[in-house]
Length: 465
Image (cartoon, rainbow, N blue to C red; front, side):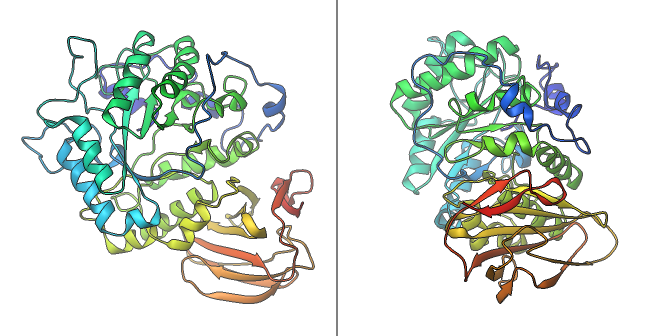
């Protein structure tokens, strides 16, 4: 359900015409480069005028949560050879059952999202999209009804272009209204609109046009766009102020793969460019670093804990892409961590930032939360042994006279009466994290704000409003 990287473009039989795609955004401010905060205010380029009302649909006030097919199941359409893992209605029926029956729905995981390769290779006689008749014999409306009956919501995939990334019918500009209406009639609750096989000019017109078309259906449909990923993810090509009026969430960067290297590449890009990306996020409009791959094959236990913590700090959508029928208990425990989800779903919707990069290869991330609380992540890029990292909250920029109650998000252990000036030591495993939830016990209950100028190590210092 992501912007098409080179792998998916090859699978589609050719290169998507995506000039300045995700790889192009790495040059001026990629990993190791200096983020350009001034670009946000000075280099915004208004690409289009949104016809009719902007998004304003009241949806996705916290980051969407659910399950998504792509990373784990890709474009497997061979249901005769592999009926259990192919893209078919059976797969989505069974994932809906697991979300409803295994404790996911009650925690907020409510979307069952179809990705690419669901449709027939041709539209019908009236030009409408239709699901593959062999793999979805009962149709998408019946699938939506099944999902809704279990207290869940259905998402679907489209592509603003002549073809989807997998080579199925795309949504050309003359089909935007028709496809939006089709999705609404089927009972779809989220649309992910990719951008393979379209030009920058077509994207600049088509993505806002889909906003208008979805509004016109009268059905509340969360709108996820890949537009920024196809334009390099950064200003001046990407206008995040405008984007927040068009989409509920957006892919900024290339698809995640089932590997730790892929997770790190996303983390590097997002935090190298946090001065641009962090102000763009908030209730109703979110940066999307792509799926959670916890429970698959590429991450260790420590790396899985790290992805969950870092995505939570980024206020990212929590869209799992794993087989919920066979998920290991250890992966399920990570994904169902209640305090983690509470932090991710914090109503303030402030995206966190990296505040320190140490020579020891320890990094510290901070996310301000409601009721003057905050979340801290201590992350190790080391590969040798557990590292003892000593610091204090005052050194991290917290108010010096404050006193905090601290809860370790993973272990549940608490520290009472931690003064900002007190030194403490956390032991961080290789590729792992320690994550804290902190709230003041001797401080006015006011939300944090980021002060860029006074931040330690070029990061963000939390101050009281």
